[in-house]
Image 1 (cartoon, one colour):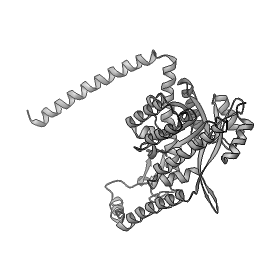
Image 2 (cartoon, rainbow, N blue to C red):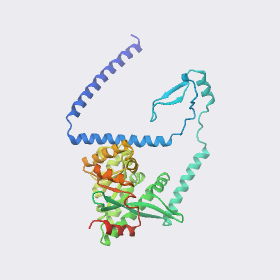
Image 3 (cartoon, helix red, strand yellow):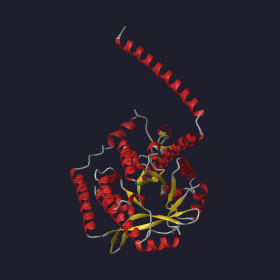
Image 4 (cartoon, helix red, strand yellow):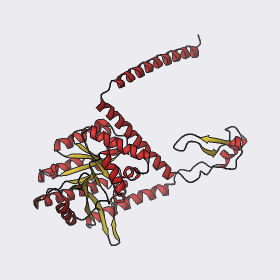
Length: 384
């Protein structure tokens, strides 16, 4: 028997065995799912919500990047030269495509130049820009241009202030820059861990100062992805605890959901060490990445923060609303606090309250403010 014939028979046999095993596993999975308890079913539904949220965020990003028209689009082309695109997030969009073997296709390939690699000068320019940003941030830090403002977090049931989130600001003559742009540029320039350490130490000093004045105010601090995986992150926390042993009970760490996904088993180990230190963790930007439910169930994770983009879209976007409701249900099933970020309208407030969300922050309630003003707000709206 020829060698190719024997290989073909072996391949068919293997294909048959794999098919039988797949059918058997599907039957077993269906039978198992029918007997799942309600709590596990809720968790599985929550996992589906995580995947849906990640896909929703991905489609929005792609839609924002997609140009108004493709360069190859030819609305007046003949019907036999038109094919319908069915992949991606725009199914059914008609684009001009000639049959692969046609003269038109060959001519188009001949006329279309291959994309050239980025010239060395462009790559050098990018490296120079990164160094310039790093140096600018270093000088700003040394020149005391950075400060922290504090945005109140409000309990939806009674509008009582329950704590603050520390948000970075850079003070300049023309005004102040906000957190998102500052942190994004710091991450791109590799200054993230150093800036994050400054934020952490500054928030810790503010927490101690408030407690020494007789006010116990919970403060949440954002930990950037690069800071979370930095070898010195846990060392910095250890130094802070050595000088202020009560700090873990008053300082909450906010970790982006994507960071927990990106660093895999390393994230799990870091979470264990944070739990041993006594710190609580809030999972920030929840609903925009494919989280592992196993990591969400780790000891220090105490709260999920629904991402601002989902909160803003929820009233008008049915899909975003379903993702938010499912995320709230998942948090409740896992006995976690759920916090909505970016609440700006009364309609968003009513929806979140009806869905069981515990707390929220946003300009509907109060903007970020300097420490002295934040303390006044705490005295006026905090727990009596």
